[in-house]
Amino acid sequence: MKKLAIIIAAIASSAAYAGDTYIRNGNIYSHEGQAVASIGVGTTSDLYKDQDKNTYPQFNLGYNGENFNADLTHGLNYRFLGNNDDTINLNAYIGHLTPGYKSKDADILKGMKDRDPAIDGGINMDINTGKGGVLSTFVGHDITGEYDGLNAGMKYMHLTHIGNVDLVPYAGVDWLSKDYVDHYFGVKDSEATAQRAAYKGDDSFAYNVGYKLVVPMGENWDISQTTQYTRLGSDIADSPIVDSANQWAAQAMVSYHF
Image (cartoon, rainbow, N blue to C red; front, side, top):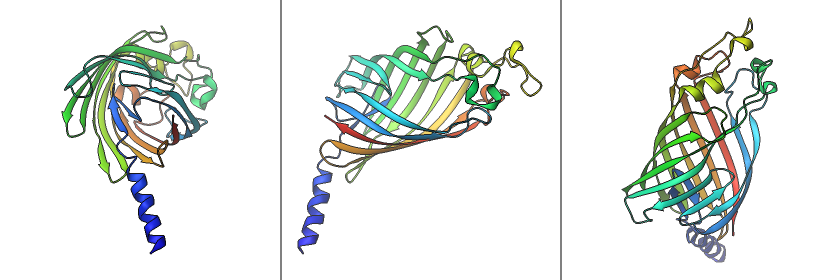
């Protein structure tokens, strides 16, 4: 009986820390009003043919506020219209990092000019549909001058509490401009080889579906796991340097909130 009482107390204690997950600016956060430090590992399928690395260490550090959020994963965003109880929230953001690539990252990229990372700035609108649902849309433009184009998208997320666990399944679509697709997936005439034909990219869509699972491990700790499947549009997938239209990514993180 004593052991059973200890187990029940542990479950009850963990459940007391559930419900800290929330959605803002199209992102999934936890522990509003606190700083966060996270470490973990992520793995992906090959985006480029014969990619050298698919598994990477993951780090995050930042602050999640009521209106202002800043971290290494999502960048900066500020809610300038609306509050937690309103149907519509508007946010300005600097983020949506595109990592780019170096010619040494994959065999198919050898001899190509490196594509540097890019960061977008833009506007996001979150529409709270009720009962944990959020429809999030965004329009952004490259502010680094790397590809110098627009991107836009929308995503539906649904926050569900399952005991002490928070589950957020989601599905969305991104529109990627011609400037973006041609820069990161095109092949210039000067970069063409017998194995890599010249390719001019055009605007395209990318469709994604996935989930994030957040398990509290006490008042300040949680473990999260994210998995996403992305289907690339033909204007990206047909590039001679892209491995497949079907892309997978998964991540596991341990986070401390303070």
